[in-house]
Image (cartoon, rainbow, N blue to C red; front, side, top):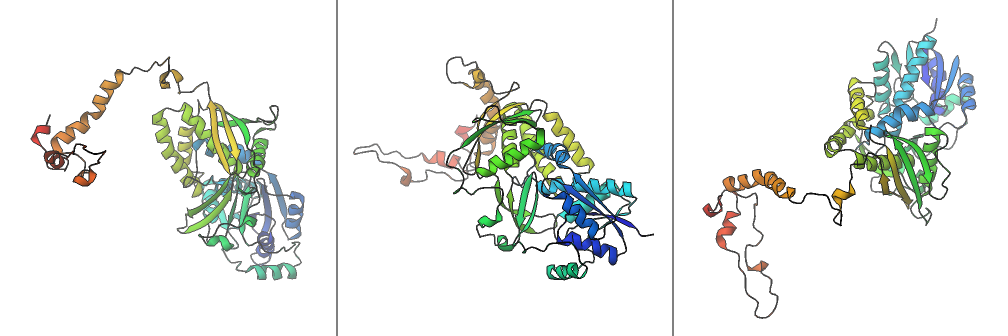
Length: 449
């Protein structure tokens, strides 16, 4: 009896050929699994293609809602942006697909799972590590990496010889992956890091030149770190209907219209190379901007400082395929505890590629106008600042008196620094002993306390 393998099936040339290759060359019964994260236009056709290519069963699953709620929202609450820029769209989708591969394998009694990653990118790591974390007994096979060594031209010939139901389109000059949280574009002319990305690389976002001249103002409401509604100022009753999925879709459309969400970065891949990556992520960029603005309002300074380091670590783990680890789970528990007061509204202006915070409010705001104001009603104790400054400066003054100033080079060494303000101006020279006292290790006894 043939072994079963559950193959992550996109319906493209690579995975369609892989179904036949795994059946014919490796002797597997192939179960195809197609997961819709917001990028599959015709799921019925994809299912029929998998079966026509030789799959014994084909699963087509709409996972858009759990993708947003179980993967994107936790990353948003964490503030997870890889290298401070990339909102991890592809990286967040891979553990979800891996989990479904494992669950379908258990249902089908499969001993293998497969995916379409090559041997050079990050995705092979994400799939393999996630599957191993969820079911160490399952074996993982990536045909493009593990034996199905065909060029695109050879795959086309293979598909024609085996009468595979695949329409071969003109090859895109780019390698593209997309889901609701973002679209990644790489390869082709983009590999020249000096070259401005051509406009044909973008699909979701307008250029700054073609974006509307007028701006759009939106209000996003959060409850414990999760965005719950979207309101456009131009249509007070609009937005916020349909839950998380509708909110992200609307932000992608609106943000993309105004050119928001383009990212061009040199990325440190987990496999050890740098790559030039282009992203479009309007909703993710807007939501991260709004969420951070609300956190600035409600988190105390100590939490804000520490959480920034947690965000970087969280992003690193997701990027490296370590979603299903105790470390990521424990960081998530800390993040969740920080979000209890992250509720309120953020107002953002979208204009010509920018998402600018122009207002924020929260019932848990730590910003108190009566403490911050310089006008009437100021409740800040100005005299308390005198003692505060004295204590803060105590170690600095002590070190200067005992070890000398930290200044390494005087600024006013000679007359070049004397400014004449008019005829008969008094010439001012800096006293020599003070200059020497400014040099570490040379302490004027008169300066000791």
